[in-house]
Length: 415
Ligand SMILES: Cc1ncc(COP(=O)(O)O)c(C=O)c1O
Image (cartoon, rainbow, N blue to C red; front, side, top):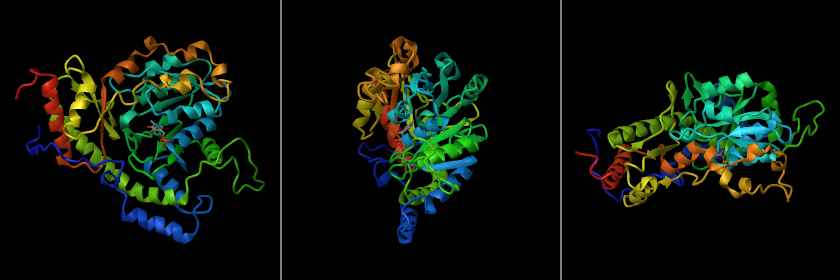
């Protein structure tokens, strides 16, 4: 425990990313929004905010191209559409993710095929992805859950051997790194979300990045109804939506971008403080980044061993409420394939398309095939985290965890 550990009080209110207390929205955002309004141009097809955001984000993460769009789900949809699967093609992905990362696969007529995850991190691995590949695999989506980078190196090696593009879902992983590279720039396409609770926010919003000029062009077109703005003879070249980000959101995002580096540094520093404060508690851990990688702590997940901590994450999370510390046992509660849309194949009318085209094995969700996912959900307790946390907040969380752990793991900790 650090020397400067604060005396705990039970009623401290933690900053929340659901309101101003845990966000960095301020004068800078207001000034740029005012500038956008004064300009009278609120669409990105004519304005400068979204274009500025795209240029600066590409520079920041080290990618040749970036395009902004309406949400993280739109970003994933844009990436899948750029890869342009044939109906019934398979996209290997994770069952531990937001539904917004999965329904775009179905909208593009492809089948999500689930790879199991490492129960210590909730991330897919090269070994689990390999088991899910088939000769119909058209892309692999790798999610860096909670900001902890997946083992992208071995996954890239596998994908390259099989000639399959990789989409990195970085909705939760702004500025996480693997070696010298930011996540999102290692795979073929990177996708980000600017939703209310993400590292930076415009309320809703998304970004895609790639080094590939053809994919960048297809993504730009997909966000813009397939219309070739600026071409000598523009047309609607293919089926696509209006997924544009408005200039108002672009203005907020531009200002937020200046705050991202400090925000991530703050999240890391506070996470290290919590690591140190609870390191001695048996039966508790947190996902560690692979060697040479850095975590950006969208959330701080605890992995709770129910054999040591009685009642596991549910009991610990319940106990933390007494200290006004919110937490989410089981994260998304169940693997995504147990949700009605996938399990009951509720898609377009009664067609079940594209599931109607699936190999039986691709839609076999027998629990025995996903031991890592079930084990992870049984053990994970997600603590909210944000860049406004100060040492006193983290010390409060640590005190709460220590007190409840003492009750639930009784007799195992001394001193
Ligand atoms: C891993 C992941 N992918 C995709 C999304 C979808 O992003 P959005 O909510 O901005 O549509 C989220 C959002 O929570 C997410 O966490």
